[in-house]
Length: 84
Image (cartoon, rainbow, N blue to C red; front, side, top):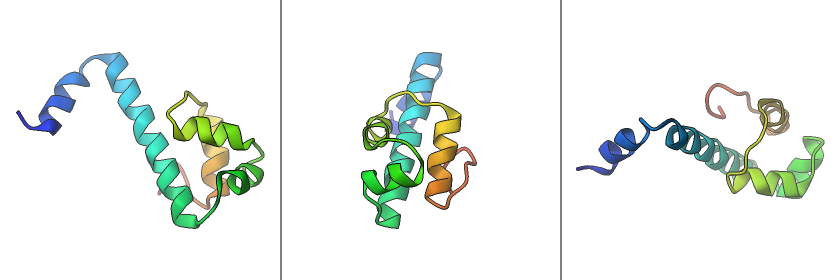
């Protein structure tokens, strides 16, 4: 079985699907921040939040869509299921 097939099988469980989605957003945020060359502290300042909030989100902690929207705007991105 290929890894992508295993992932799709496991994502049939709603808890796994939610965790997988959250992880994808966390990774997208990390890559977008790195791409812009911003530190967590600078991004936090631009998004009117704290550096620890950015760090928690990048580690996969739960977050609100409003917070993700604030952060994506601070990165000059917009939400579309992923940061684009």
